[in-house]
Length: 66
Image 1 (tube, rainbow, N blue to C red):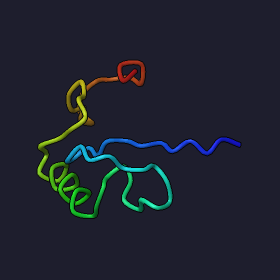
Image 2 (tube, helix red, strand yellow):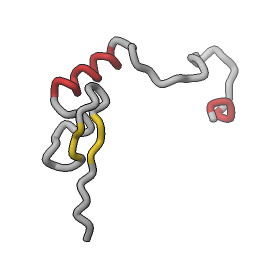
Image 3 (cartoon, rainbow, N blue to C red):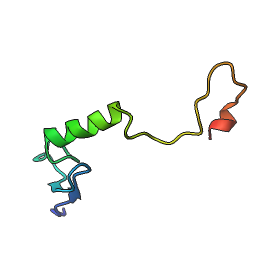
Image 4 (cartoon, rainbow, N blue to C red):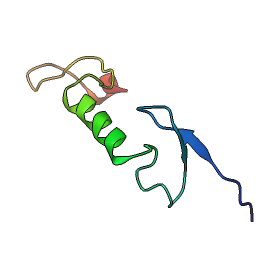
């Protein structure tokens, strides 16, 4: 069994974080960085790109979504 330690960079501050149970906020280094990231999503500073909004009145098919 391998005991390699995996470290990642915190997405908010880039500090090294051990990926394991000893880091409860992983991939974030702290609760503060986790909340900063959540706030950015809530304020729509971050978003996942899409092809645009589809409403029920538009003609569409599931093939268009792929």
